[in-house]
Image (cartoon, rainbow, N blue to C red):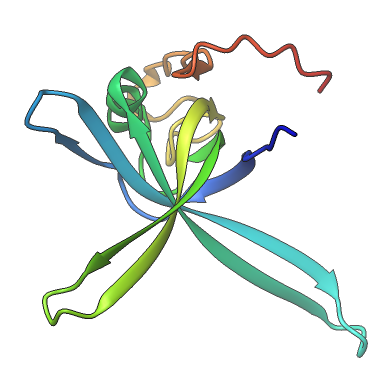
Amino acid sequence: MASVNKAILIGNLGADPELRYTPSGAAVASFNIATTDKWKGKDGQMQERTDWHRIILWERQAEIAKEYLRKGSSVYIEGRIQTRNYEDKDGVKRYVTEIIGQRMQLLGGRPGAGASGGEGGASEPPPAPPTDLAGEDDDLPF
C-alpha cells in the first residue's frame, strides 16, 4: 500500500528568507510562514489562531525565494512534511518539523508596493511561474 506525505499551505512570511549554500554548492533557503484560522466562538466573538510553519527550499527555488520574497509576502507552498532531530548546545535532543518545498507560487505583488505599483511609477515584475523540484507536472483540478 502506498503512502502520501503532502502539505499545501498559503501564508505570509514572518521574515525575509535566509539563503545558504551547502559545501557542495547547493542553494538552500529557509523561512517561516504564518497561516491563520478564524472562527466564531461559542460566545459569538471572533476567535483567531496563527500557526507558524518552517519552509525549506532547495536549488533554484531557494534562489527565487531569496530574490522575490520578503517579510509579509504571500506564498503558496506544496511539499512534504519532515521531522528531524538534533542535539542542542546543551546536549538536549530537539525535534523540528519542516515542510520541504516541492512547488512554490509567489502570490500578489511585493509587500509595500501599493495598488499603483509603488513610488516612482516603476512596475513590478510578474510573479515567477510555479517551480517544481520533484519534476512532477500535476494537473490539479483546482
